[in-house]
Amino acid sequence: MTFPTAPLAILALGLAALSATILVTFLALRPPLVRVTKIWLLLGFGVFPIAAAFAGNVQGFEATKERQFCGSCHVMSLHREDSDNAASNSLAARHARNPMFGSENCYVCHADYGMFGTVVTKAGGLRHVWLYLTEYRNVPVEAAKATIHLREPQKMNDNCMQCHSTKDSLWLAVPDHRAPLEAERAGRLSCASEGCHGFAHPFFRGPANEARAL
Amino acid sequence: MTRRRVLDAACVAALAALALMTWQLFDPRVWPVIIAMSVGQVLGTASLVAYCGVVIADYRART
Image (cartoon, rainbow over all chains, first blue to last red; front, side, top):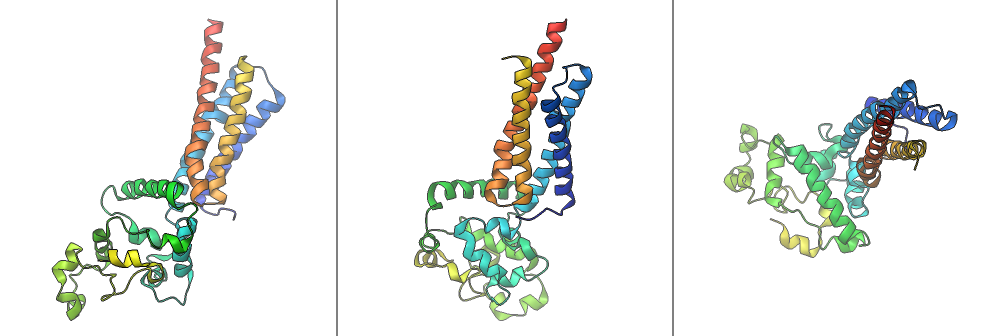
């Protein structure tokens, strides 16, 4: 637990503190319910908490992009440790060391792109919460390896191609890129498959997952 | 339940909501964030509704 330093978080804390001060003062002093009291209470119950909730929500949504957040479910602890490991050569760890991905590398690689990408991704995140509550809460990481898998693996190449467009001449000069080009662009051949750039999270591939690999 | 008691309960609910909503800022992991955005906001909204109810009831009693 650390003290937040983001401006929005500090704003949310300040607004919550103002609201709490008004409410505690009302409870302690018990003033008559006259117009002035009602106006103060409107600030304490409505204006400040709504503003604090808004700032807190925006800050909360930003926090959900962080690796710390993704790795806070125990079944994702190996993924988090690998990305944190400066010596790891996994695809995920190498991207985590890239400032464009950094501490948000889970989100950047797994988020849906497009106009409603953030909303779709967060809705999918709620599905993860449900699965965690109902299926994985008490499952050891080693056992979870057998069943955790990508829901739409064919879409993962789309995310790779946000940065690696597959149209650059240097990229196309690599024979292994050029030969299966259509299969790569269509997602039938995963960039992160064993014969290409390797699995993004090689330590997390149980036998069942191997069979699911593209 | 008197209006004063409703307001007292609303104050306690609002303080609890504020605590839940600020918890996520100190501990941005899955459960604090989810609880802040669900339980915290439901409690906060309920306290605001209770306050509005008291104000409307007070206004009606005076007119």
